[in-house]
Image (tube, rainbow, N blue to C red; front, top):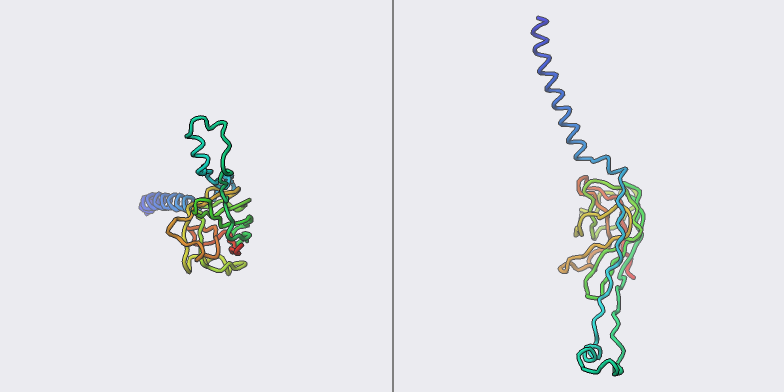
Length: 197
């Protein structure tokens, strides 16, 4: 009888060990706890305006002997990036701080800019432009996927200043907030209400 129990116990023990290793492996993959201790800093400048030559400059550069000629008008200067809306990030599931800006670039395109971002790292973090209200505390953790939102891509780094292009077919005036969204667990790490400039 003891021999039968020993034979049955060995495969059962191996089976339990295999299941435990598989569960631990899945848990590590899913939660990626090591990211809580790994910071990734990304520092991007705001995209610069492209300087295009004005009609007088084009004429000057193609006319022989134009080096001595005085330009008839001042070179055209770009208007530069314009901040349309901005807000301060508040903490949700993780301590989060920094400034969010909705910026129209000189070429008419738009970006969401995160400045001085400081949040936790985590699995599958995204930057979302949303129409949801920003609420303090746990009431605000899960609201951003309730309405309309546009994912602007994966968070480039959990610290620093970064730019996220808004697709040309998206009207940024329809959205009122930005969330650092953990897509794996459907929770906001932090968010900012966009107050119009």
